[in-house]
Image (cartoon, rainbow, N blue to C red; front, side, top):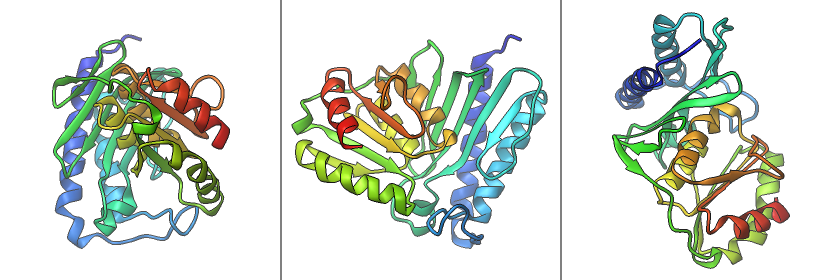
Length: 258
């Protein structure tokens, strides 16, 4: 089944912006729900309302598509196309007002990512990509940094804040932080799209979920970021991204440390 990927991108961007506005409008009145997988895996009624807005909008346009959504509004499909949705990546930042968050929507054909949108509501920035068509920020082309040596590089790090992963990240930072220019902790999707825009020279994401990285990974790859994992392609267990010139050095050190 063919698909107009530009139409899919435009709808996804519209829904992401609408969800982002909902998040800004309801930030002062949000209600917290019970934690999910662990005490730091938080969710609010705004996460759920944002996901419903996105899922309903996509279903109205393509009712035969499958959806995988973080807060449980997914559904099976028959078209061979699947939407991967994180309605609010960085909920802890959002509720505590301590950092950025984003709305993430990706479209897969089978196992192949074909379209992606990551929207930062607070900054008013919408990152997009269509498979083979390059990466864009607010309709302007973006590309990866030149890639300085690791000792000068700014590296993003993202991880699930459970005890096991935090212990793993602590060991990684012990080994990696002295070797690089500096490190920023940031939600996974923004980690990847900041690499795409050249703001970060590289990044690591550990023990994520597919909805955390699906959209950002396609945008990063379309901007020229080299992506990989422990061996071969990136996975939710470990995603390493870097400017091509930085990739060999960062990948070697990250694989040894992680």
